[in-house]
Length: 88
Image (cartoon, rainbow, N blue to C red):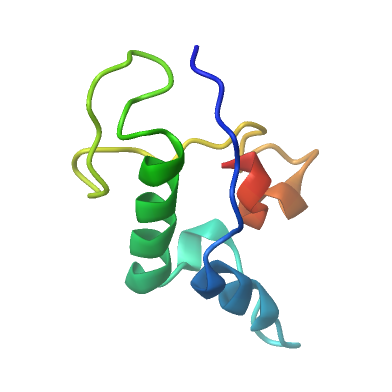
């Protein structure tokens, strides 16, 4: 597996997390298309356009890559980590 040096999170992810209100809880499932695109682009740059598992070329599109969570976003133990950029 390739080692990845993490950079700063995209501003759109931080903005999404900050939109929490009494009636709205931001989560990975309700990210905007813009935030998902920004996250994909940032992750691809960090990884040097190479998948950290198979070492194949990746592109920052929804059909060419999957955003992987280190600690699963569906795991009830770590719900706060689903929007933590260091967990992507």
